[in-house]
Each structure stands twice: as C-alpha cells, then as structure tokens.
Image 1: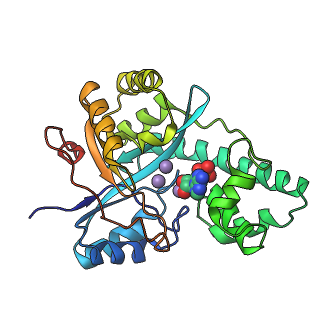
Image 2: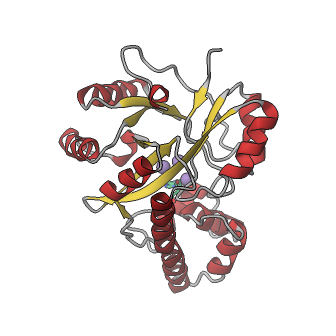
Length: 277
Ligand code: AMP
Ligand code: MN
Ligand code: MN
Ligand code: MN
C-alpha cells in the first residue's frame, strides 16, 4: 500500500487541542496512513495514540519534538521511531521538563509585572496533570482573559522574543538531544528549518554540527511552506546528506490553513526519512 505520511503533529499532551485519540481519528479522516505524534518534550500521549491507531488501522510512529539551544538560539529537533521507554531518552526529557516548569513560573511572574494575574494557575490547569506547558497555553490564557484578541497578538505583545513576558531559556544541548533520540533507536530530524531565520552560512554551520553529532534528517515539506523554501530545504538535505521528512506540525483544527496530512509531495531525488525506520 502507498503510505500517506504525516511525521509531525501535536496533541493535548503538549500544545495541541485534540486528545491523542481524536488526533488519530482526524488523521484517518484525512487519509493519513502513517502518523507521528511529536509532542513538545513529552511522550505521554503515545500510549493512548497507539491504542487509537490500532483501532482504525493507522501506523503510529512514536515521536517527540525536543527543545534545543544552539548558539543561543532555540531549535526544534524531532525524534522519529523512538522507544519511549529508553532510559537515556527518559532522563533527557526529564531534564527539559524541569527547564520548562521553571520557565512557566518566570513567565507568570513577568505577566504579573504587567498586572496580569492568575496565569500560572490557568496554564497548569489547562495542561492537566501530565501535559507539557508551552507558551501556547499562556497565549490561550491571554485570549480567554481578553488581554488580546488572538494567539498571534499574544505572541506579538507579550510572549514573543523581546516582549515583556519573554524569558530567554537555555534548553538541551543539540548533541545531547540527538544522542538521546539515537540511543532510543530513533532518527533525529531538524524541524521546520526555515523558521529559524538563519542566513545560509549559519544554516550551514548548524547543519554541519547536527550531522556531526548524529542527526539523520531535515523537514523538507512542512505545513505552510512555500515552493522556494522547499527548494532551499531540499538543497540543504542534499548538501548535508540528510534524509527528507514531511510533517504538517498540526496543532488545532481551528487553523483551517494547516491540516493533518495536507502536504505537498516530497521532491524526487532525495531519500525519504521513513526508509530509515
Ligand atoms: P514554547 O516551546 O513553550 O516556547 O512554545 C512554542 C509554541 O508556541 C510553538 O510550538 C507554537 O505552537 C507556538 N508559537 C510560537 N511562536 C508563535 C507565534 N509567533 N504565534 C503563534 N504561536 C506561536
Ligand atoms: Mn507547538
Ligand atoms: Mn516546532
Ligand atoms: Mn511542532
């Protein structure tokens, strides 16, 4: 059977709005046959997703999206086909989660300086007992409390880099994150490479290091990418001998322009990442 892959998606285990079960059901409705759930810095949604996937005959690829700091900038590294029980990976996840929880308190304190109260309690409640808290949770809170009209405005006015509630965070080391993924039997993929606004020379430095430390792939097709960006990503894949991945980065059905499985085909002449699974 010809598989339809979507190798980047989020559930309520991080900042997606659908439960793992509802995400799988939606994937099936969109004719996705192989889905990777890649929540931010957590694997807790994978067990439920696996059960749901078996029920509707979708192939679930165990995934994660790790937050990394390299050269003082945040990068996202997707791990695909990981064993979520691997001890090295679990310890690494725990390390990032500690950083995340400390950051939640910092962001809430910065909002209080702007006389916005109750954020901490709200985001903790919204994330639930096991959910990872991200800036999206703060954005939802700011919308719900009518401080802003949209999530985008929440980032533009409060949460984005350089804004009053922004706190710079040192996430995991790039080499550590790639190593955790590899030790867990997975493959490490640079997520949405065009979103870091790197010059070509910095992108080359980054990909050189990524490859040296054991990185395997790069997203060539992501949600809302334009043809020029596809061409540039493809060139980086070829230049650095990285396999190509495709994933929507689906978070929420309300974003009507970004749907599960709605992806341009991978260009010819490049190795698809799933050949490494
Ligand atoms: P965090 O990892 O906690 O910094 O949260 C990052 C998440 O917030 C991303 O995965 C996106 O889902 C969302 N996000 C980041 N920047 C923006 C933005 N400018 N507008 C809307 N959502 C954003
Ligand atoms: Mn997100
Ligand atoms: Mn990301
Ligand atoms: Mn993502």
